[in-house]
Image: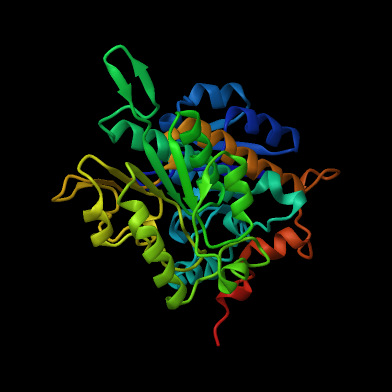
Length: 378
């Protein structure tokens, strides 16, 4: 079983899909692992560390994937980059498939079996494979650190001989994995924290972390969570009521962090330009949904913007990648855990059980066709 770990081809991507730790464990499964030179450099992993763990270092992408039966990546590679892989090779990555029909068709036509790690079901046996949670957790932490770095004042209350420094007020919008970690981090820094989400189950979670919950708690709110644990898209009427409630609250905040995303949809707009203008100069907004259009109307992907009233809006791309070493370590373990379910331990070969619920949930393309039900035509 040959496994390839190519260097990522996106300029903003600092993560890598394997670490020396997971290389050793993949080798124990019977794999021969090839890593493209420099693949781990941005994560602080030199080629020598991969070699010491048992990997072979290849000096080009073509050499890396040559004859590979499995390709492990962070982001979906282009089909053209995998031309030398074995027939029917598996690609396991964050596939970002929505709106990428042409790219999916090319992967299918190339005969590749592709698995979208972000589609891993949220069930007990798959928790260790949940890349969305492992990466969002780091994004929530980093968002608070970035906000504190941009904020021109201290975050905790300080009692000094020169007077008292008030604690910063931090508002977290969207209480998934990223939001919960943002709350916990902001609380550890000593901020006064409030949070909002449309899912009723999050109220208790927010309060358990010592923050105050803010939401319009009507009948629609009580039904606002999918069976998979995600937020449903709310009606325009509810969004208007929620916006009215939060507008007055945002005006009093020093830092706002938005984390609201719904898989396969543009990010919901939570902060209008008028809300930004209501904040005092020096306030900070960190938009973690900027790659999907942003929760803040004025956010710009990949940029920090200072508005005309002195509010800074931070729109970093690939926030987990700003903690590249930790993010790579967790992501590589997610992939390893999934790989362990796809390998025949006796023959030490790649042999997925195509009827396994994890395989069915994540499989995008196979045998020349796009097979995932979310992407069927008609």
